[in-house]
Image 1 (tube, helix red, strand yellow):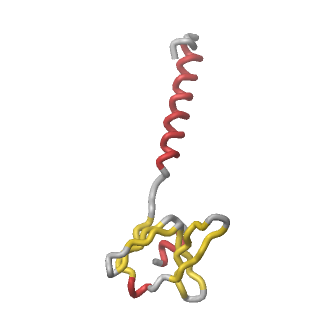
Image 2 (cartoon, one colour):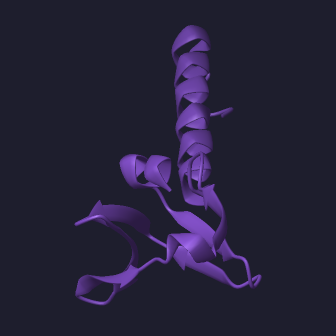
Image 3 (cartoon, helix red, strand yellow):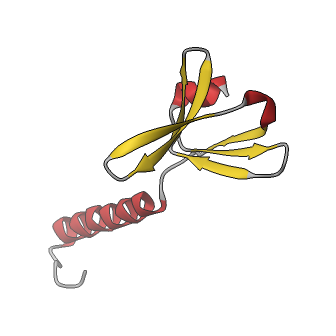
Length: 92
């Protein structure tokens, strides 16, 4: 839990009862962990009972749309290099 609070990344909490809760991130305030959910207009904090938590999964990596932007950017760079090196800008 402490690591999740420090990283401030999206988390999935699985309880001992096999319930699953998704949170935008976790914060630690006044000796209490809170799961933060995105509510339109503001973030809402919900207290987390540490003794009921079985597993905390921290989201890693880039979101799916970021990979799309990287692929488009890579294509533009490769096409530009090809165009500048060959002079054949219409074949791309």
